[in-house]
Amino acid sequence: MIDTVLRREFEAALGTESVLSDPLQLRTYECDGLTGFREVPALVVLPRSTEEVAAAVSLCAKAGLPFVARGAGTGLSGGAVPVAQGVVISLARMRQVLDFDPEDRRMVLQPGVTNAEISRIAAPHGLYYAPDPSSQVVCTIGGNVAENSGGAHCVKYGFTVHHVTALRVVLPDGSVTELGADAPESPGPDLRGLFIGSEGTLGIATEITVRLLRTPESVRTLVADFPTVEAAGEAVSGIMASGIVPAAVEMLDSLAIEACEAAVHAGYSLDATAALVVELDGMEHECDEQFEKVVALCHEKGTTNVRIATTSDERALIWKGRKAAFAAVGRISPDYFVQDGVVPRTRLSEALSRIAAMSGAEGLRVANVFHAGDGNLHPLVLFDEGAGESERAERLAAEIAEMCVELGGSLSGEHGIGLDKACSMPEMFGETDLAVMRQLRAAFDPDGLANPGKVLPTPRLCGEASGRYRPHPLEEAGVIERL
Image (tube, rainbow, N blue to C red):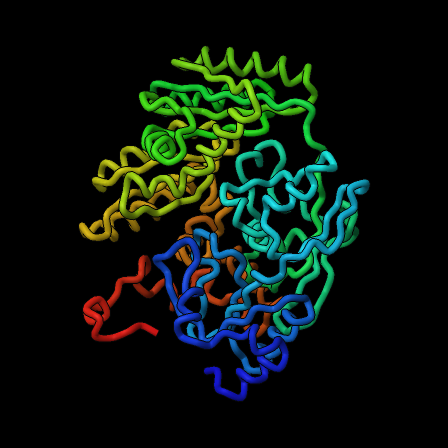
């Protein structure tokens, strides 16, 4: 519980304007992009520097208060959901570029800088930042570090962990330490790699050093239509088996195409059952030669139409359509869950067939849009909460995630485990594995204050009814208010 004395200590450390305690303001922070999990925090603080983050965390440690770091709130696994009677440490005001060395191709950032902003700043120097999650115009580098985000181009360029060389981190006791180095590799255990993807359970990154890449000489992009999702999946396997490493291979099924076209009008074929977006980049002569092979492979696997982007504007529109998919699905369904799992590329067709069968069994539609090049599925389970379909949708989403593990994949490719899939962790890891994870977490956070209840299953969490928040009838009637 946060009393007046403790609130004033936070105000003294960060400034009155950086501490929120009004119930209406606190409601803004009750959930992330997975809106079914909600909890109103007791306090929200908005630091502007490493020192202020350290001061806030130190006060939490002193009082035994749980805290949750929050970036832009675009996460889709409930990772930024507050803890009851806890503190949210919002990094939204930490938006400075602290250092930029174009010659060394490195940039040092505060965690509130958006993913797309990095490339915008680097572009005049012929550089860019490779990881590109679909939410890159709003998601922040701090959130990318927490989730080890990837994006469409991760099949060639990897994830956040491959592009962050160093971190300045506030540990759960309020102390500050450095992980990694300016160089791509540093001696000793890879604590930087351990921290990236830990979903805020090991501390808070406050200064992030990223490496930048040279803008490729040539980029070629196509959209290939297919009569079935299985044929599109076979085309993906064929492209990857050929030895070509595309910059991106994305797949959309008919429902996803319908939604994207309604929102963006990117020129996808509405009569296609599935579409592949394939992009190659690199040296011009090599890119052109491999692009011809990709076109031939698509025809070999039964494409009904190949559209090749002839201008940078057309290429940008194709990608605008693909990256709008999650939000666009709201045009064809009142409610939906975004799932995230990984299967081996060789089993893409099998996974898609099983998702179709599972959705049919539940009587719900599933729109598929995903990073096909590395088998990272993003099925969108469509439902109508008003029609009482919520529980079926939750069950189907969980079954899809666990099916990915059964096929030799994983529960998450980039959205994280958070609250959403913590209870499915035993499907992927044995008790010994989970025990080691708990020991490692305790080494960083012995008091369990950093984002508790996330990632690892707990009896409390998994013994409760999971899923979307359902208001009490008296709340719906306006008789009572949820604080």
